[in-house]
Length: 265
Image (cartoon, rainbow, N blue to C red; front, side, top):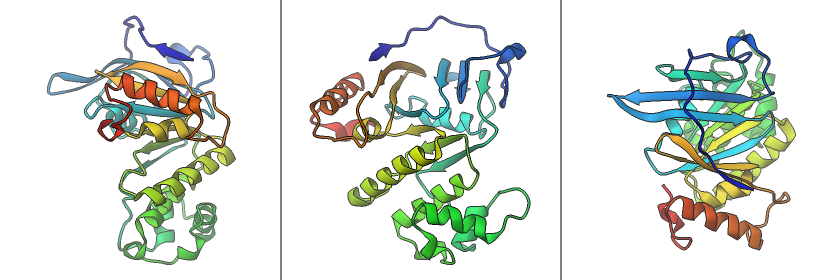
């Protein structure tokens, strides 16, 4: 089911890191709840009174043209940008993986996985996460010796080791070759089904969004302008006519001809 989003303007409140709904009232269970979010740069609203809910365990993909505010929204949900108006409720346990793996070259892979964790976690904690992404054999390697796909899996392990209730993915497959990208997509799908955490994936790839997500959102002019449920069985078949229909509809919403998806950014 697809829906055009037209929500009324609501009053904004202070930024809230996590917890109950504003005012202490009980809320419908959500992994993410955003109300009236506005983020401006030099007086221009990149995000403008945005509303968003993500259910626990839901996989949501976010599409939109470059500059529409997708990555800005993800950074806000990750707690990396707090200069905002509105209300943002997210779990305390959250993790983010970016397009660039951002591994520290002077630390071995297992130490990169544990980077930023509180206390002094044992190496075994990193090894378990690396094994989950198929990278245990590279535990003691230096980041510069990893392939692009291996580096991205190490980045995923670093996110998973935090046992997140919300996993934020900012175009994590964008720099990978086609074959490695397919493998990485399958891995994320398997990890999500195994872990059961909520996922918000920012991507320019319409096919990727339909392949992985329960729900696909299209962001335009700083708001969620359109959404559609992806009611297809898993694992999904890109040759399924229903898959093609969803893909074509999303491309149309993005202002792109179905035959030229390369310009979905």
